[in-house]
Image 1 (cartoon, rainbow, N blue to C red):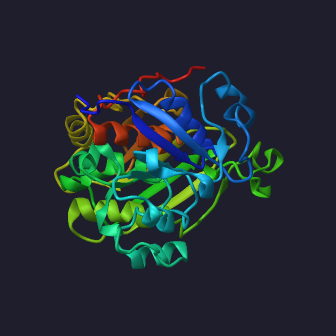
Image 2 (image 1 turned 60 degrees about the horizontal axis):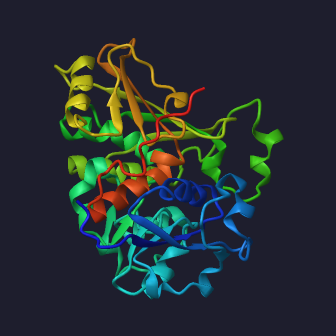
Length: 350
């Protein structure tokens, strides 16, 4: 049980974006949370109802600039800001304030790797060793006592959840992994961009970040942690004309003596008792519509036509398990709440 005598006082930085609004939606009914502060830049001075009418009727503070926020009465900061913004901010916070950050600023343990992939100098190398990777199903024990939790990227969540247990058990080859991922447009954020206009996105699909998407470093880091060796993954993301959802189709080779059913059994064993991960029975095909609005992950495992190969399909809602829902799950772990609290929503269908 949570040992807090009173609700956790929370600030959400970047509350006018999609992930910030999703956090408000999830936390507004969480009995252990008091949303004390919401920040925005362009929308500072507005109410949350003005920025997001669907959140009207909630008793929420108005949006303010980060510079005008007093952290004296804040226990936990959720960061929903672009990469490069959180290093300096976290360094200015009182040490008692805990942080769950959705930017990439603390995800990569090696600051040099961060610089290589994000083109910025790491601005808080002294704090990086304190950061814990926030994927509860794989790092729950470390998350409990952490001061800084780095929320995973949406794509890496959908790739690591199925692959890490298989790689850790030595069931799949590590030299020819291919991950083909598709995401809804909300994954690109709410800021106005020509490439995200309806007429640019609808009635089509396109690949981006080909050969060098930033999330590759995060995926390969997770597989290195699992196996103790460097792993190179072929990863290509695609933008789909839908609002929410990620579907990752992952192609793997099997080590000698391992069959497709062994993969399914290993995943089912690893995630037995996990409230948000479900491995489908043979023949079950996951779809993004099965997880829309929920913190759930569905995994299907299939034999490839090529002997000795398998296809693994994983789906999630990129704004929930791929972002804000995962942050709430981390908060629940950190503060001793039931892990499903605030995340009980089932998927919206149709």
